[in-house]
Amino acid sequence: MSEKTKLGVVGCGGFCRGNHIPNLLKNPAVDLKTLCDLNTDGLEQFNVRRITTDMEELFADPEIRGVVCATKPDARRDIMALALKYRKPLFVEKPLCWGEEETLKTVDMMKEFRDFLFVGFNRQFSPLMKDAYELFKKHCGGTATTIIYRIVGEALIWPPAHYDAVINKKESTIIHEVTHIFQLLHFLTGNFPVSVHTAGGGNVDNIITLEYPGNVTAVIIAGDNGSVGFPKEYLEINGNYTTIAGYNFTELEITACKLFERRRYPYTIAGREYTTSHVEMEEKLRAFRSSITPEEQSVGYYYDRQVHVDKGHAQEMEVFRQLAAGEIRRSPIDLYAGAAANLIACEALRSHTEKRKIFPDLNKLFRNS
Image (cartoon, rainbow, N blue to C red; front, side, top):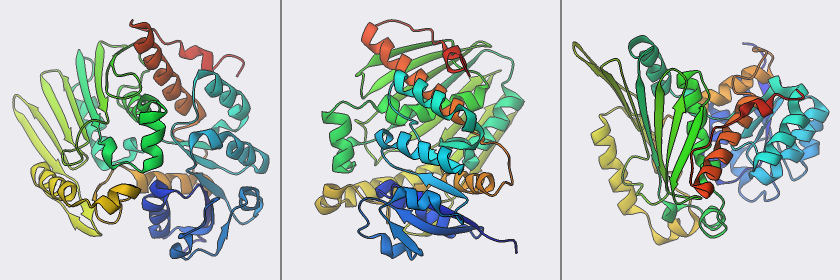
């Protein structure tokens, strides 16, 4: 067996502890050597060789081939600067940063290292979305197409710091969350939107309409006022008298005049794997929601027993490992892809503020590049 790829992680909060760290530890080709966070409480449970509060120490380690960054967005530019200094491939969680000005500054800072920056948009790596992409190209391409994407969560069960940031301090979920779907739509269509129009709450609870070249229109229903007892995400593509429907990464259907196909994808609860209809998965979601205790809700941590669908997190970590190991030469979701999702989000917010359709100018990303 070839030598394992040594990686490090900086920013080990709840999401990282529930997703990235376990996925890296389960990957037989990864040697997760170092975890770095200002709060190291509880990190010893992962049984890695080195725990530190000094992120430059992590980057300076000659054994570490790449670094996963899962800090808050306002801390990421300093980490990107270290990746540039030590020439270490960097996986950085979405969003890349805040705001248009900061996005353009980040592009200017990192453009020479663009191929080795991997922005954490995981959904295109999920088995369901890979299949949806292939079915879309095979059965719906070249015709007028409508796409609906629902991404609605429940703010009541968020970690308190995240709730405070979004609900009280008005950090936008269009930046926090909907950037995922802007990038996914680029993956599915191969294009960036020519127009964006947002109605709704601004920082939360919106309907966003996007027009793409080739007579493709997409509507994103995004919010935080739903229930986790109902599936968070749903995809529907209609084109060429064909419908493709994806139910929360669990079940995919394609229906046409003489065609019907259903595919199911495994999900886990407390480590136990299930492969069921989306209806049965929804029953488990409702059971999970009704069982959340006030103590759990006070900290907003449920990774040990909630319904885990495959959104592509493990696969994106494996692709990043390949980048860090030199097995692939270019990030599949690079600096410019991450920045483009940010700028579309900024234009969606501007559309809400100005109450009009916006025509994004993404060429600004490439000026002076």
